Image (cartoon, rainbow, N blue to C red; front, side):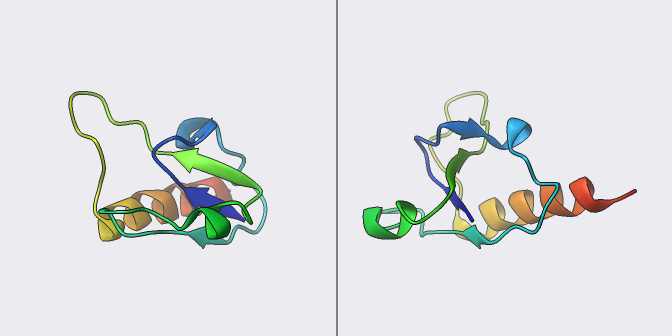
Length: 74
């Protein structure tokens, strides 16, 4: 189970997405509640060069789910 957080200890580029993955996404304004993010195996951050601070939940989910799908392509 992976949670998307601004302060994630794992970059999405480095996350192991080879197995089944359950994603936890939170709203842009406040992110995931801490108790929910704490349930995840890892907190994942999406690399964002430049001055962007966060993505809306639809954008973040799209990026993460695409990366998951890419990891399962043979």
